[in-house]
Image (cartoon, rainbow, N blue to C red; front, side, top):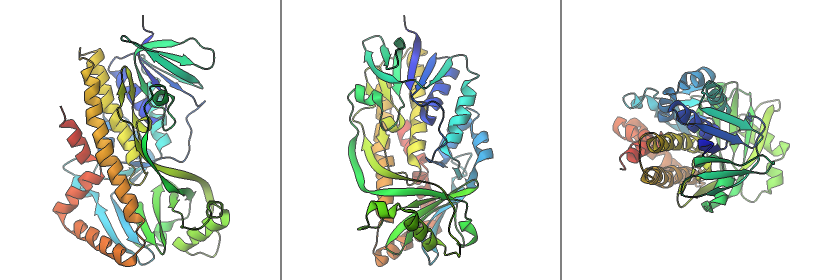
Length: 396
């Protein structure tokens, strides 16, 4: 007899969201997380409109709105001149209840989901658990642990355990794709850039002389993504002196910047060949990795969790067959590959343009889009991930 109906490995926002959806559908679910606690670290911070629509059905969106910053527009900017293309998200007012981006740290979503799960009798969440692997057969999946605890069994297992997924490795699915050669540095500071850069949006992607940076505001601080200069050793670029020089290049001031946090990261564009292997299923970063520009990784993972929750509920409660998981793969994987990864790659290529003439030409084209309501609506439908979701739902 199975111990549970669904096992989830990974208690990030995607795994916790899936657990809450399943528990509220009456599905017995247990989550195992390697970490001892939820980390409050530097990760995603942008929530798109359709994600807020989805999370509203769980009663989570209002909590995020209370803890985040509404971003009614975002921009691409030529620094220090101030020329910019501003994408007004209010044109989405007929497409969503939330025609804006929300800037809110990812861990706040995880905390809200975990708090909601404590009230669900069909859900358990265990931290500090070392998952060693899994075995599956025609009727279920057995999860093995590395800390001496007895194996557990369920009808289905989900790998929501991120880029280094033990579930993905065990079912021998490879994250095929590429890793960009550069290392990016993410720093946070309380300095009020908006008081010094006229017309700055809460989300701003900026070209600067010989490089680029981005500014994303969250409550009480700005997150600055510093993209590397070619030919400069990595250690030098990550030094306090070099970080200070980059920040001074954004806004010059007489005193040094207070850097609250900083961390380097590599950017990947990768996806598995199939989200499903028998009764083991992948979701979120375990299935696909992309550049963080545009915030599509976290949002895409949440969208995965809603589609997968529907699929598992259809199977476990609605009598659907295994083909329903195939539909999950066909709905989500092409969107990740052709929409999320492709857009992230195009965003990176655009912002890494170094020729000033080409930059001005790109910017003029974007400004023309922003000035045309029809073209602007089409553009932000795509960049806000609404178009991709509609395409996904059309697959039957």
